[in-house]
Length: 466
Ligand code: SAH
Ligand code: SF4
Ligand code: F3S
Image: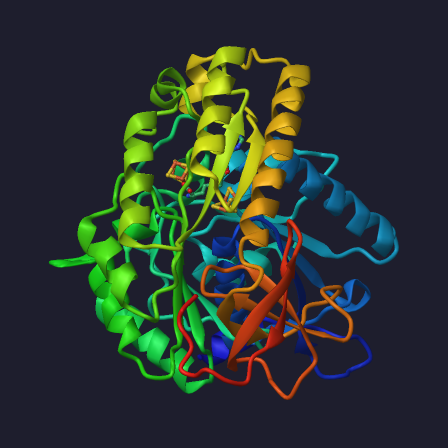
């Protein structure tokens, strides 16, 4: 770090006291990619001599790493900005910046919003410039922003500053998306798809292993399209599985278009690659799937599910679904419902279509399904899915699973230990001798739609992956 940077990140204190570091409060919204990016931001700003704080009262700068995927996500941020200004009051102002997908989605409109009074914005590829952007905002010059998207930035030279003690580390192996699903803002907010190199990812995962992480979750908007020269995603997972200390490898989110047999075969035989696939369906009608530009038909999706299940018995399958895409009729919604019932996903995230400015769907199609119909569809589908999820979870009662013990999160369970099965199901356990990071053998004794309950088994080693 050069001296120049240090000076940028300090604040002059009156009364002749020495300048101190600028205090930053960072809040993260949206997907795991944003969680990862916030760790990159921490790493970059710590090097640039900023200090991170948790208390809004003592912060000089608040940065919100934001999501633009649905209207609700953006409205939440607007509310938060007003709340922050209110809490700080007129006499104690601070600098507020917006990072992430809202920055590249709304761009200058964000800065020009007189009500919000945002001081700076920076898009997902601009975090290395943050110190300059913040300094400019601090100097109260013209509002500062950098929302340029890069075809190359992968932050390969930044090791994320992971904050909490955990057993899992997120690792972004690629960035951006080229799929242009017509409803989706991500290709515009995060730019073109680019993969990190094999060597660079391996270096990060080896370092994580040496720091005690037991599980890595590989991240990408299209994680299974990752490649480096001749090496594909299955090869990468095979390489990572050879790192001794890493017990489990997960990934999210894959696209149904990129599931070669080599990947499924690896998942079937490699004990470290967890048997959970999050496979977004989005809709069950071929007409809607085509309008969405998902590039598969419902039948092809179902054939892929059959193939996955035949190669990987006991695989846990989860999905994303959108209801109320423009022109979706009741009958077409029924197609989605039928697939949900037919596949029997372990769980599903179901969303109401939210029109996003700049997307192909917003340009081509009117958002013509009424909110009442969207609500009717989402309520019905959630109800059906909840019943399926409960049945799926109940089917585990009496089975034994290997469970990786995790740190207990706030509000997660008093006087209980928590862990996850290979298939990523949450398990509550009695407090025992075990500590986070231990792999234990557990017998499932009860189930709800949200979690399993279990007790430790002390015999019968070695345990299976179930
Ligand atoms: N890259 C990932 C996730 C994208 S966003 C993937 O392709 O799987 C996560 C989910 O949000 C999507 O799968 C989709 O179901 C939902 N989503 C995206 N845009 C949306 C919109 N405009 N309205 C409603 N839901 C949306
Ligand atoms: Fe969005 Fe589709 Fe890309 Fe996922 S694959 S990020 S839904 S455009
Ligand atoms: Fe949201 Fe951007 Fe993630 S729009 S879902 S934070 S990629």
